[in-house]
Length: 119
Image (cartoon, rainbow, N blue to C red; front, top):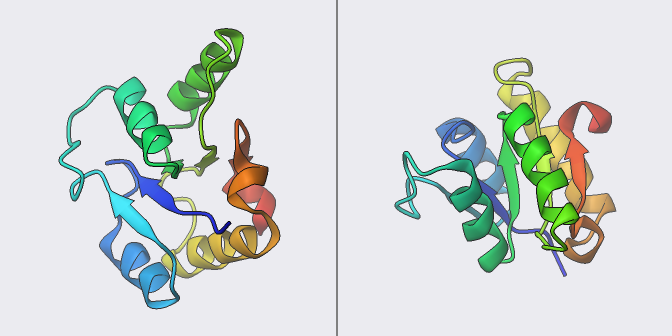
């Protein structure tokens, strides 16, 4: 099964979303999901309920949530974390496309990937 993404409000760059959608990537943003200004836990819960990999630049908080969820025997659909404003739109797009081409939605379950690993 292909990876579908949920972009939290820290990572909703319109140009990136459009570029990925133009390449057939299934993305929903926090804005489209009416999830603006929600706590990080709600973003992860929403992404998990929708079976979407969460994409965010909020590395510290989501690493902590990942550990907390696994400690509590809770599952999530996966996370891709990226340093904010560290990469161009083109670089982020290429990294995400590379990840999608090498990993399945099943591979991403309970997994955290850092965008920098996909350069």
